[in-house]
Image 1 (tube, rainbow, N blue to C red):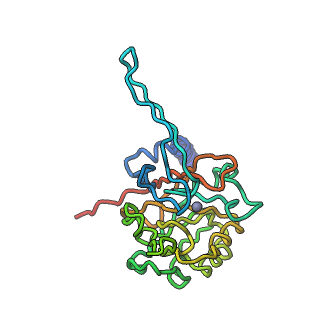
Image 2: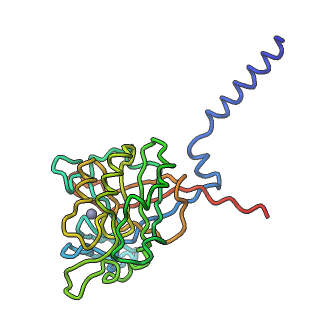
Image 3: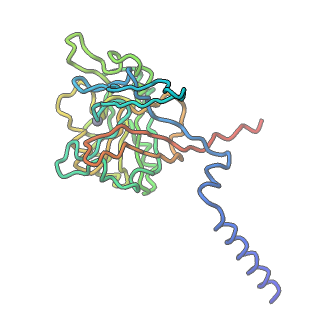
Length: 270
Ligand SMILES: [Zn+2]
């Protein structure tokens, strides 16, 4: 009996020692995970909101020095709200957090993808309602998380007129978005959701003038991610998001590098 107890005690201490030695690096670089970039690049083709300054290199030095060595340096300027970017709560709430205030605990979080692209079916007038999302209830584990809605719009990002649905008047916009109903439902029923992303230019549908969804999400303390690049398959849950905006201290928004760390699909055993 005494021997059995000693053996169990030895096994227990060995297992706990092994468990302590497993680091996040061991998990991430085990070969079982992949890093997926959900970010559009910043260049001449990056989509900005009408009237906002596009991404521009204001200064370029690229030359060979007298000692034959190469030297290159550039300066850029751009509006906060263009390309893949983050909206801070301050964007629509005077007392809300600036970009630089958002804590890392809200920026490295589980990621849930809500793929409604087959329901949206390329319809620029599509608006997402609560009844499209009922299955999400199954994933409400209580952990902090972000939701990213896929309308299937990233494929148009290279064509600004199509992506924004710019009308012949050159002023009106038309692309899918969330309804007020969905924004209210998320902020009241899912207190663990810290941010909302979309693969279109705004969380509000393009055709609306009153940006009600922005206001509801800001007032609840959520941040938004707009123009998310979703042009490949990605698991709808089980990924971790790295939401890394440029840390503009008093920013209402900022360029965003958005990455998902996802378990690789298991190969079929056939
Ligand atoms: Zn924005």
